[in-house]
Picture 1 (spheres, rainbow, N blue to C red):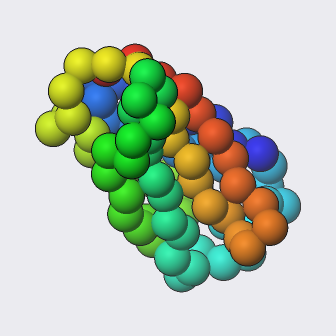
Picture 2 (picture 1 turned 90 degrees about the vertical axis):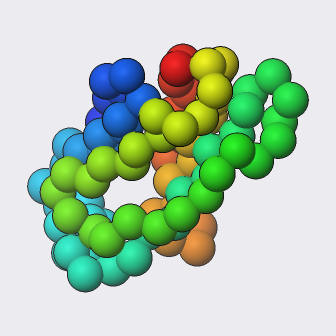
Length: 84
């Protein structure tokens, strides 16, 4: 399980389960997609190096409500809704 927090457009993703996928694959590359919730349009996407805590800088996006989807494996993802 993952905890998402938003501090003025800097999204921090922290693992909550010590036996999680991130704990076992610190060097794995995770991908993410951010969608504008109103339009459903992909606003940005990228990748993150696996760690106990990861950050995504989304301060360049315009104000609005967004959905972040973090792909953990081919069959597992986590979703987080946030407002900028």
